Length: 505
Image (tube, rainbow, N blue to C red; front, side, top):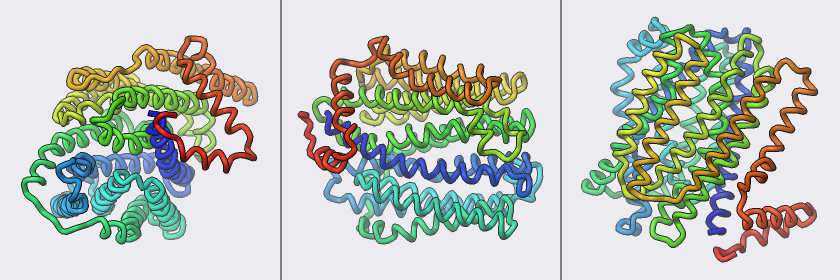
């Protein structure tokens, strides 16, 4: 199992480089988006609403095809025709994207009026729809790179696209005075460049093939996931739509900023681990020790994630003060810990759902996410009028807890995995206490505040040790790792020997 964990860890780190780049780009643009010379606070709220609308559109356009490709690519009955399976999936994705554009373009005025009570943003929404269609194709190509464990190519390609989008966004906003529209022009160009950059790789992995029965089976597998993806993305964005309807656009801006900061955890940690691990989960379905691998994936990812949650929560006040150009955004720090904790439940829910993918019971995921979306709507309606952004954050946390429970119970019933529930609960309780302690330190002077927060962060692994969190073999492994890598002069030699680990080591 050690080799599998090492492979997953290595690929997770490589994927995280690309995902970190996404957030770096996002953080570079926040000072620009919050600069009164270019955008007002309400403009930032408009950008947030357009971004989440794009997320919903992409989830619908994906049609469950990336997940179907993941499942069928390694199916023993089709292993000899992997290029044909990819070709059929890619053609289907392009067709779906074109269909959505034909349907949604004429409705852009209606969408603009529904979101902003004006049709002035209809052209920008057309750009958003086109960018979403291109992104859906990009996602499928990214899925192929994940399947083939091409993590380095994946990272290089996505960083190149992000760099192009960043430079083009700055150009259109600062030098062309294109405002919000310039953001989505840059995204259309960036997504097009990504497809062009990987055209050789894409063509190399294609072989003309079409089988209606296979496509029907993939669609039957993917359709519940389409509903799940659509409902899941809706679940992610309901809070901002609700704030737009039940409160002020200013609160959409504040909440969106807090959400951007906390979502670093999902993108850099949760998504990176998922990108690396999920193809391995499919490959390990019938291998000995697979359930222990799934269990340890849950525990180790939760441990790393909780360290990130504590760090983001403790330093949210300082982060927001550093990256924004207007003090109007400073109050967003108060809901960062709540939103960060919600990511912990997201990670547990995704990993606990492995069993449902293995037994092909994806319809259960689809049903659960629809139920969770309805619950989230009700909670937002109840809590936002009372507590504004705090109410929206509470609704998010409560919904993710309920969603986790539904998926966990069903998945364990279909395919039992011995997750270490006691240790996961310990991580959650201790991590939450430390995370929320940062809210009590904002009135302290800067040096004392930063010192106390840093001590809280560093002490977390040692506090876990006092509660017998670590197994003896894990402590031994940590000691060996530290002793091996503490000598930086042997870094290259250690890196070479790491590649020769076996499953028995």
